[in-house]
Amino acid sequence: MKISGSFKALFLSIFLSASIAAAPGQRAYPQAGVSAATLAATSSAASAATALAQDPEAAPDQHYVYCISSGIGPVVYFSDIFAAVPTSPIAGPHAGRNGFPEFSAPFVAFLEKKYGYKENSSAPAMCRAIFSPNAAGLHAAQTTRQAAEDLARQNKMQVVETGWKQ
Image 1 (cartoon, rainbow, N blue to C red):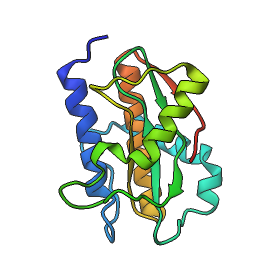
Image 2 (cartoon, rainbow, N blue to C red):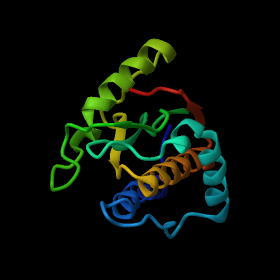
Image 3 (tube, rainbow, N blue to C red):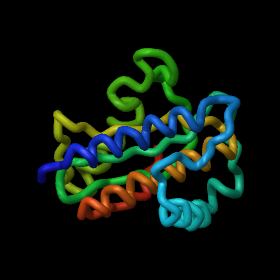
């Protein structure tokens, strides 16, 4: 399946926006380019994440994380949002290089076993682990994950919410 340049650019901007929105000590605000429908869907996603909503504070060394399969192909797989301790740097020039492999490798192994997923080396699965361990970070993780799902659907991809957590 061919992915349009606008999809790639928008997908990248979602993740870059999240890193800005969820920087430690900053409040996450809805990002430009996120539609009202996406923000409304985020509210329902927040309701669905009741386990996280009951205890929105992760431990200080944890960050909120979610993983996504490559955006190439007819199906895009998403993990749940979970709190975990990243071992890859979360700031600086090599932050999250290779999409936080400490999370993406087990996620891919899960997808291969459960769904017969085949990793695409030119567009590997990745995880986002940049979301602060507080309510604003959780909200930013929910917002960007929902925006990525909406974008996949707009591009006629099937979205599968796997329920996977590390």
